[in-house]
Image (cartoon, rainbow, N blue to C red; front, side, top):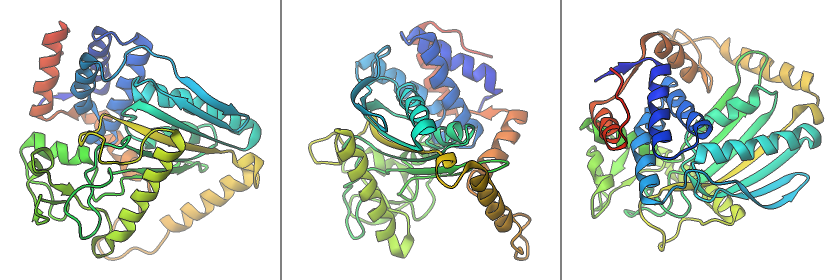
Length: 350
């Protein structure tokens, strides 16, 4: 499995997107987002997505150079259509609009429909946290990607529907970003591409029986991913259901439905941006968030535990390591990248 430093891997991804007709600035946004996901340890949202995005561009499912169309706008709301543009590009355009509104009004919310895959939600929370703002975000798969069965069911009814919340502190932001299934589809795909079994408790087959074979998610009849929550999976499924209703319903896009494709290609999205300065005050907010996070970190540790971690810590730890040691690309992913490079006449880095 080849290993690359972040910058040459980013440059390679950029070159592939530019060769596929993506404007250079947009190619840079997407490539940096994907490589940053790898750096943070979320390989499911990293450069393994490049061949998928390129395939969708080649098939006309994604469009390389489209505007963000504002469907409705008030002082505190933006409802937008991404025109099936690259999700990271369009989501950041929306987020910039909302951050500007929140600076003035204290809160701004927005939706996105007809968007390509928006990637790792935590990156958007990190972006606004750097400006002293908080973010609540949710997505669905635009009606498709129904890979999660309700408790007791054996056929997918909703997608893995992640939620993200992030707040600034005086040091590092606290960023909670998780799917409402036991694992994101991309994490199952990583095991599938590596030809490795998935962890027990992630999957059931088409008969509703537990399995560790990731291939069940990509064959017919199709297996499903379990909701998070174990014996209380109704909590994970219930949260995923509400996020589906909010993202799909508010955006003017689609909630999960039987008429949509089983395999999703993009997202609907809801962002809510909050400016603490116009609520209890920015100084109070930072004192409160820093005080509580410090208190939690100082919790007495059980035997064998070296450190109490908070949401966002594992990503920062992994990023420090991978910036030093590089990003290892699974052979299956690398073969797909090399294949796309050949198709697009892009040099392959050594």
